Image (cartoon, rainbow, N blue to C red):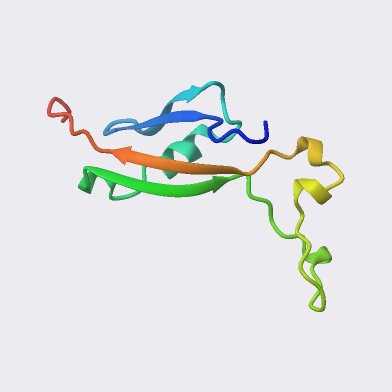
Length: 107
């Protein structure tokens, strides 16, 4: 719903044997590929820092080249001007905190 600041809370973990995995999604699944989410949430080199922040966007739409004119302001293919906007997912802004915890028991 419009006006909500937080719609999902996600937890991703990295396992030396399994790689990145999305372990929790609350209150429900985002509808985005879980492997992609885990990879975005755990950027390369994160293990070298105790803490890091990243921002990424989900469900971005691609500009429709047929609707872009050199003489006019570009009109992008977005849910508001799409004929099948009911099937499109809303743009999600992800604010991501990575906290590194090294497990001494892991190999």
